[in-house]
Amino acid sequence: MATRTDLRPGERIPMSWEDYQAFTVEGWGEYIDGAYVHMNSATQPHQRICRELLKAIDRALPAGVDVLCDWGWKPSADLFVPDLLVFDRTDEDAHLTALPHLAVEVLSSDTAADTTRKHRKYAQAGLPRYWIIDPDGPQITVCQLQGQHLVAVAHHQPGATATLDLGAATLTLDPGDLLTT
Image (tube, rainbow, N blue to C red):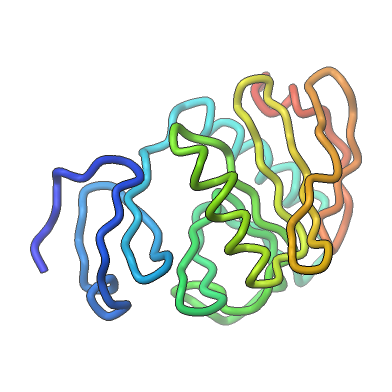
C-alpha cells in the first residue's frame, strides 16, 4: 500500500487490520470500525498538558502500574491511541490488549471523535475510567463506566484542586497547573 500524504484530520479509509498494519501515512491515526482514522498533529498546549499530566500520574502510581503517552490499546478489532493510558505493567510491546485503568484524551480539532465515537467505543470495551481534557482552561471531565455507558461524573476547572481516581491510585492536582509549567 502506498504512502498517503493527502489526508485530512478525521478522514476515514476503510481497510482490513492487515492492510492497516502495512499502511504508511504522514501523520498518525487509529483503527476504528474497520477503518483507518487520520488524526491531527498535536498542538503545543496539547503536548504540554500530556507531558505535565504524565509526570503527575507517574509520581502517583504504585509499583507495577505504568502510564504512557500515545500507546495503542487494542481491546478487540479496534486499535485506539489515547493521549495517556494507565495500565498494569505488561510484557506486551506493540499495544495493550488488557483493560487499562484509565484512558485520557486531550481534545483536538476533531472533538466529535473524542466525545462521541470514542466515548461509545470505550464503554463497549469496558473501560472503567475516561478523562476528557479541554485545553481551553484546561478543564477535566471525568467519566466513569456505569452499566454499559461512560457517564460524566465530574468537571474540574482551573483554580480548584481536584482529587482524581486513577484506578490504581489517586491524584490531586489543579487542572490549571497542566499549562503553567
